[in-house]
Image (tube, helix red, strand yellow):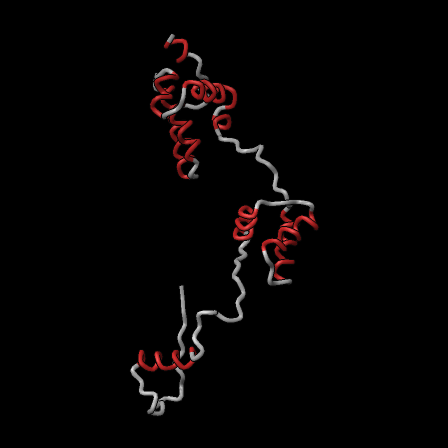
Length: 187
């Protein structure tokens, strides 16, 4: 049985070409393809499908699929194909429109954003998914508050006093310099 499994492999590439294909896939950061090509290399070196599959950590049924894919199309047959995902509910152009509308007519509540998308495009999103899509589009939200309820009435005076203390200045003495001190916050 072992010999029949070894004989099923079509040698599309020489061992040197296979090594180059593995190296190219590593440079292109195609880790899934590298793993599949390593499986084929183990077959080239005389392993059975089961032994080669164990070395790269795949199931027996996957070894058969990968061997058949290699025999049919070589390296391209082993290249992972990701397709068939659900298409987005809104096209890129529609999503750009939504973002423009949101930027122009601020502020928006989450309910208003849901209503806008539903009324305009007849599409609904789960609230957490919509917030994720907005973040991915580079939009950030903040709750507009005209005034922090925890802010003391004399906040400006407290700030000036603390700045003077931090800078070691005496508020009773006039400034020696005419240039104000500017504070900036950076990331």
